[in-house]
Length: 390
Ligand SMILES: Cc1cc2nc3c(=O)[nH]c(=O)nc-3n(C[C@H](O)[C@H](O)[C@H](O)COP(=O)(O)OP(=O)(O)OC[C@H]3O[C@@H](n4cnc5c(N)ncnc54)[C@H](O)[C@@H]3O)c2cc1C
Image (cartoon, rainbow, N blue to C red; front, side):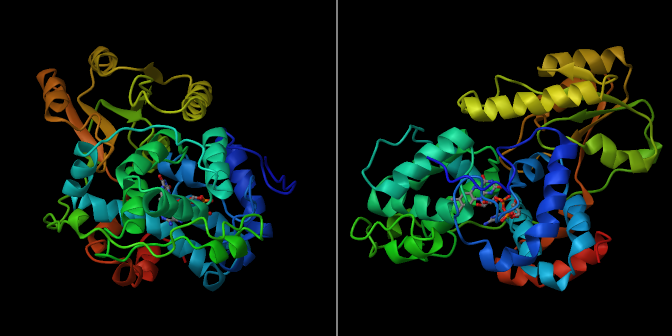
């Protein structure tokens, strides 16, 4: 089924060094053409885009790291589009953080996740298969797919978002939920994204041309519209870690390198790698294998770190290490796991204070995600400067 491009890495490696090496290659060979070529879905293995999303989502690599590497071989002005894309995800995360009700409604409206039947629309069936087999779809294919799902097949955006949630190796609560809402016309009232046969033909290099098969004149269902109030600003106060003794750090799929990030604070940390294989049990085999391979690699890279799979095991470890403070990656909307009053109180009962740590990248950017992406992006050069990228 796949068109093989021998210049692009296959699949998704699970060693950080390999990921960075692949990106260095991409940065020196492909990034200069990114703005012109990024919209083309050239098929697996998608040599024209970075395929960094599974790593950025888990922060195996950070936005700062990626941009520093990109700047080794490219000027900042030539990277404008790529930098904006990196900030799109930050923007979606900040936007959702300010409107948690949007995610709550998505979760409460859960109407199942199922594999779509064969539809006879060749491109759509191909993308279904590609997503299941490879855990990934090109951004343009995600837009066409969501549009066909909603407007040609008449399915709910919620069920589509759930299908992606189980199968995307880069699943991010903000980018996925808001990506589907954007296509459905729910981000800007009634502004729907319509997949058109001519556009698919052009941007798949004529591989697909579903002429006459798509509903190219759909209408927006006003009944789905709901206005959400923006929550008050994000009240995150950066903890003073220098004052913390007997401190532990948890790394998990919200931030797999928080220990490295905190090492610049020069405090001695006891570490724990956390992975609950039972959490979100509907994930595809592909995604589960990717996650467990990542964790296995981390365990061999960090032999002094404890490995825990349940909250109970974390409590036991923290107690046995006589920790006073336990740092977790900050849990944004859609990622809550440890950040619950029950668990925080359980720690407190053992005289351990939980600290949920937000990286500067998010802390600086989230407050600007209060309106649309256009006003947000005006802050990008200031944000780069604050993050030491220039
Ligand atoms: C319906 C739908 C669902 C989506 N679901 C997700 C999701 O669950 N997780 C996810 O990370 N992205 C999601 N996206 C956004 C986008 O499709 C992916 O981030 C991108 O395809 C990842 O491939 P890449 O790393 O090669 O991107 P590149 O083009 O190389 O971009 C570099 C990085 O910028 C960010 N980025 C690029 N495009 C977007 C975008 N449109 N929105 C937000 N961030 C972007 C990603 O972090 C990406 O890794 C979704 C888009 C749509 C339309």
